Length: 209
Image (cartoon, rainbow, N blue to C red):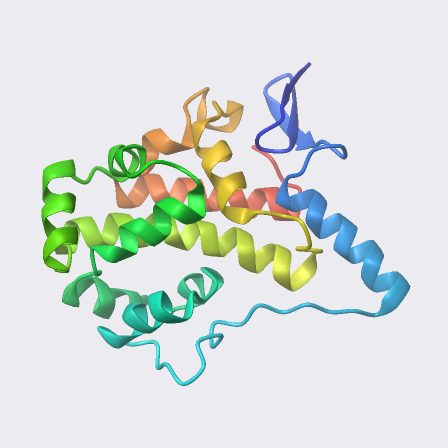
């Protein structure tokens, strides 16, 4: 039996089950359920957390950056809203916010999402927007951070839980559910990101492949 502490799961014969002692989101959900039974407290992170900001490009992400809004607001966007943002281009400054949230260097972030360092640095300096492809990659990772924030915020106890740091560790940890590959290895394609988001959702439900 091997324990994957970064993801908060225990691996047994190729399967994963929650590790009660680890700080994964599924355990935050469990703690929150117990807390609600005691206090009746319900915490909800809504996609409309940006006061006065309509979730449409290009103003949504600029307001997101100005207000330091939760990443759950990005996860809550509709497919059409995300497509609109990607088409208009994600501000390069968003990469700095994302790297800070994940507590990782910009170079590591660029490597995970497949953005060329020279291109990112040039657009940051010019306060320009990213290409559609780079925008989609950045939004894909941001959505996973938001997914974890939202699932803990809606049904768990987010106090003391750092979604960004958890996602960073999760991305680096080989997963038996992925045949031993790291989630970060799948982040450069749309299908790969779908696999990763599905795995995160399984952690919430307790179903592990």
